[in-house]
Image (cartoon, rainbow, N blue to C red; front, side, top):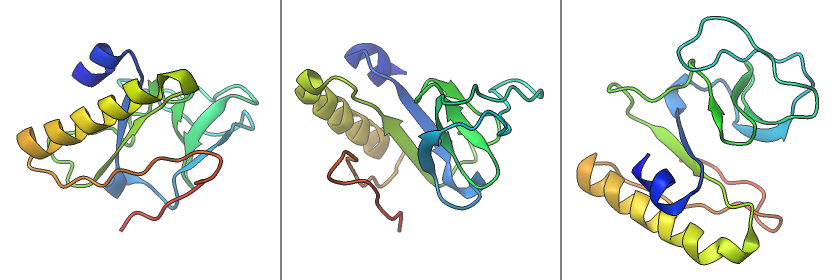
Length: 129
């Protein structure tokens, strides 16, 4: 949340051990399951809405804004993916500063190891090792 507020960008995290299959950025067909943080009711995204999903359903909708309860980060999370989006090319420096600061915070305060990957039209995928 600190990085999100400081750099005015969306930052979301998912517990990788709770994902089913690949994590994909896609357009919703409107029928996928989505249980929002703190809820137990399905609220499927609208058809055409930008979502992150795995083989089981949507884990984040409206780009990286509305998180799923199923893959939320908890005190027990050991493997996570953190997504920061930059939809404004003129903000690339701000985006890279946010990435760098978040990496430093995770390594210094959470004891984690981080690998940075930037996806764009030239780099459309990466494999998590």
